[in-house]
Image 1 (spheres, helix red, strand yellow):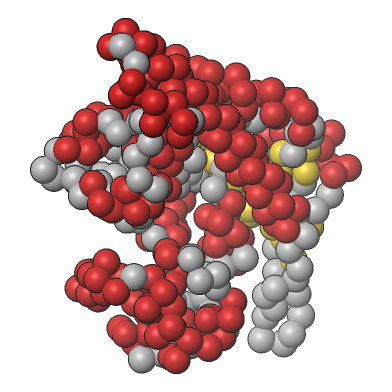
Image 2 (cartoon, rainbow, N blue to C red):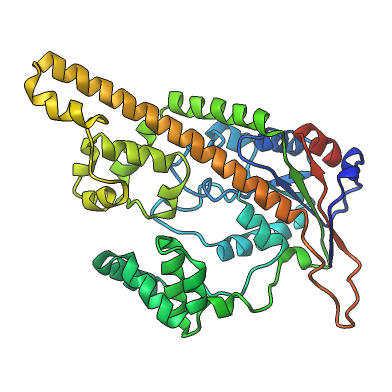
Length: 387
């Protein structure tokens, strides 16, 4: 199977076959959803979300999730499928997409995969190593081990059983270290060995024609869009949403849902302002303090030390000023983190558009079908390609 990246094709409108699969790949805040709605209105497409944050129920504002009314008018597969306490692996995503693609084609529709989780797209287009999913009981054992002994103990153990992964991973990469140990304990095979086994990808299906559109807008334009989106999130009540999540679920800071950009920065803000939500009995306050540092009601330590000597009115004023400063810092951190996310998405997109020939038939010849990967700088160009 050959991948082709052809920016000159942006002016062409392909005659999409009934067995087509379309991926609309672009960084955050670039306008993917609006174009997806337009394409859905043509009657040719069904929408499949490719977003690792939209899978969570009750996480709406910080994920820029379509509203209830929008989802009713423009149904999305793989939105609101799990609770924030649960995990959803890349392998599960690929399995779900395989089923949904077949369902769309049976309905006479073209599946339109839209979102910004580039790791998901890479799994679809380049394939996954056959690493098994972690058994729940093993996951619980490893998490208990981490809580009791610390991630450094797990990292040292990884060095003994999987030196290759040990050298590759950062000592503080909790998610990947625990995942590597889970795989080893479950299979007695290092995850690095699993990762070198041949890949298989949905896009290698010779009975399907894949079009993976990579939209990479100008950075200054995108940065402005990101700032505007974050302003909307703050105004719509992202902080209140996170407090509500903490009230509803026994969350921990290391859950995948709580590592989402925006939510992570709000959690840090709540910890540093010593929000009373962490006094809830179903939350482990110590875990949040370990993740973000001890609460600091005042950003300026000198102000904090002098509060006791001020009048009640002065003390209240200083606390208000410090909380306002903490809020400002939270918003700046969220803006920076979102821009960094977009930067990583650009890197992934460039990698995706340069995928090599990766699959041949038994004779060694290239298979006839291609995965077409045209690149664009605007959503309007991508829309012209697909209409």
